[in-house]
Image 1: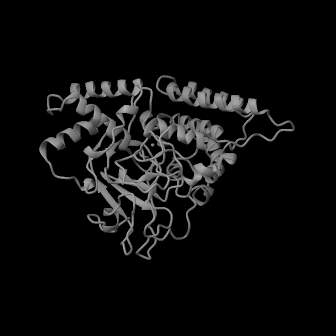
Image 2: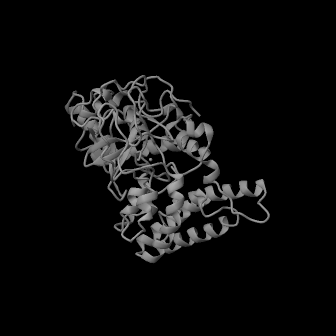
Image 3: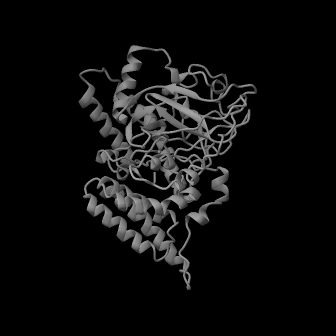
Length: 419
């Protein structure tokens, strides 16, 4: 799947859902370059411009044209349709003097394609740099136990193996933040990519017990009490996501602290909902340059993250860039870095590893508010990788899932079990 050569990859060229690797494929690293802009609107404008001036395929369209992507317009609710129309209006407002746009129906399809198949580009601290579309990379299906990650260098996307991949194995990426339990992950996938994941991790729910760990009490909480607390946790996560657009850092920190206090009556500190709010609190502390506070929260989440996240998780890379001395335990446990990387089929060589990668919306950095973790760390993508969302929704780069059904897909969210 991955080739040390920048401009050629015989193995990936044959990716069509039936096979991703052919025997003898030289593998290592695969790079693709395509449209990059700060937001979905910028990307759409650039795509329209490129399509006007050339009919040639871009370097990242050797397998699939952007115009062949699924837009899933029939599955959009009224809010998403309204968001698309708002984006189209903004596109005309900012670019109509410079670009001759197609009709609004064509633009609606384009925005649907970009929203479902776009990637959020981030630096090594997972601060938002822009959005992009990589048609060939978007062919990869989703799994909650992915065997590759997507990293970025400038306008290039690099696909790197994080597990041993044998010839004939399907290549899976993750479209979403994998911290959360199965039901939450699939709710996010259905909302953004219009399918339900049927990977082994979702089928077995093997990690849900640890992710939803309850506080050990002499009298365990009743099932109904647990359900109510889960409902509260999901609501407060949504409340925080909206509040960070208009509340002060002090107010946001108070939301984090009060919610943790309430949830701790039922949830253990290792529960993912507790960890979510701890992570947000750490982000607020970083923004306020409260290094001691950030350290306290960071030390609380390190060990649980090493359990809940898969190997080579992006959260590990981002936390290593935080400008406070997190303990070395982090690099040893959260990243699960072995002495040598996973072997890649056909080469006998080890993968050189990865840096500056994205998994979900975790943003770290001591710079602007836009680059702080509170801006984009949500239970939603580049991830994905996932494309920038507007209004009440956040960005998340993306990817999708198929669960081993060997059919050719047309971009993310296609030919999978739909919700």
